[in-house]
Length: 550
Image (cartoon, rainbow, N blue to C red):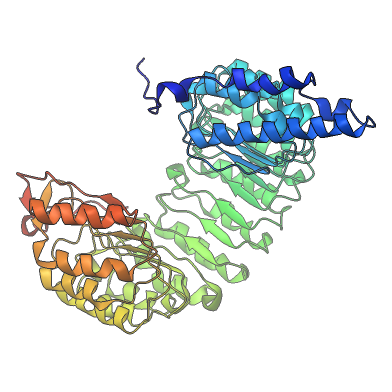
């Protein structure tokens, strides 16, 4: 299989073995000299210090090749396209990082099968507290090697092995018994965990006295093998995890029966603050199995039920228990079509003044529910009503409710916005009402005229903006020459901007070069299609059938 590797010069690819042995050869002191030379004369001590300084220099050189800065306490090498050779080199350098507390080598798929190279040296960083190995294509041998090394890192608090499909099965079960009581977070997202794994995981979680975060999202097989009873065993064991504050079970194939088992344990876990049950479409019609137990989670702050096919009955059951959840700051029922019809009831029972997020994208909002949403908007840090066509032409109702220094995220993708809507947004920006805004998503609103985009970018007031998206729908295009000068003029007034998406907008070659130069000069990530041709115009875009919401 062909593999994409980062480009290096020939000199960069040479291993540092020659340099690694140079100091030891010159001084005659072994690499673990610090521990072997205690109490010896000052001359030897100076040599040891020299060895340490030289080792730190090698660490700096290695990280510089990868475009990273050295930090004695944190080693972050995610997305560095590391190879097995790099891992061998890294392993020989960890002895020079005795104060290391965090190691992240995630998203380096080429190191799969060679992890033992690194784990055999973990005793040199025994104080490590965070270890992340996400998406490294770890195999059973890698997991076994990690299990053998865990006794050498007794202070480990965070272990993240997410997106390694070979972890599920006997590999995980061999690892779980090696976890230390100090562990606070365990992340196993999309690891192909089975019902048998669920049972083993339950036994482990029950004896980890400090476990706070358990994330086993995107493991649908956890609940598929009903005969094994694995998930029910995991759910039952959770009642002993009294320190648990975050439980994420997104896309785990949960059913109403699963909620029954889970609910009985949640009654014993009043400390839970975040509960994520999203993307479990099998919950349809069964939320009442959980809502009966929710009032016992007295400290619950975040409840995520997006994309669960909730029925009107499900939502009514939820609304009945919400008044007892007085600590709530976030409720997510987005991508549930029926939610659009109960916004008024939902808002009436929520603790409005402490709400921070209430996403209602793809909820088929109607005029009444959109008006009701405006009651809670003044308190929200994030507003998301994307894919709700009722917003078009009514945006001022929402914008006039926003409070300065509160809103940081505004998502209005595919809302059928009009030119007047953007003119009103421009006026809100000019008044400084969204000066704290960091994310603005106006994508898929091709019905906005040039005057609307020009007014927005000329208004100012977006000094905190970090991400902006004005892309058109796929298979459409439109010229942006009429307002591009306003955008380019606005860039200096947006010093925090790091990402600008304007896909499928077309410009002339000279304007395109100017756009690329302006963004590159500011190190802004530009998402743009410079060669868009032969697609529909944005006016044709709006005549396309509306995409199904939810």
